[in-house]
Image (spheres, rainbow, N blue to C red):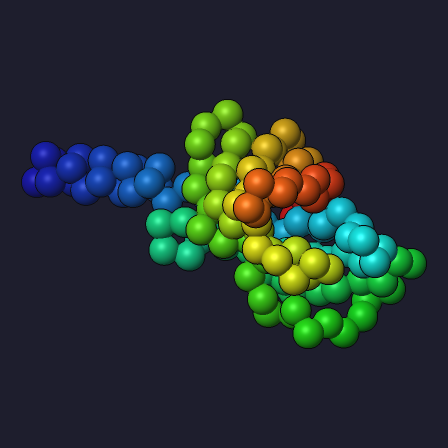
Length: 130
């Protein structure tokens, strides 16, 4: 009986490690885009990858606004590469384009950049909110 109990506890402990949240998960405030707008993106698992959905949009003065992009995946197909680095896709609402993304996280800051057809764009630095 003691062996079964120890095996059960060991299984629970290893499951806790397997389900640990990725550091990228949470809420991120985007940098301002070409229109001065920013957003709040909720990053969470989507299958074996990470996705980030736009949950709030803000005007240049920081006031919440309506946006046709609310509910849209801004980050998709994103996977960790180690040392706070991620690759995947990022959608730019102000340009209406999806870029191959490179994300670099350092503490509560996320440097976002992406390229499409050899044209690269700096998406600025996002700040972790929660």
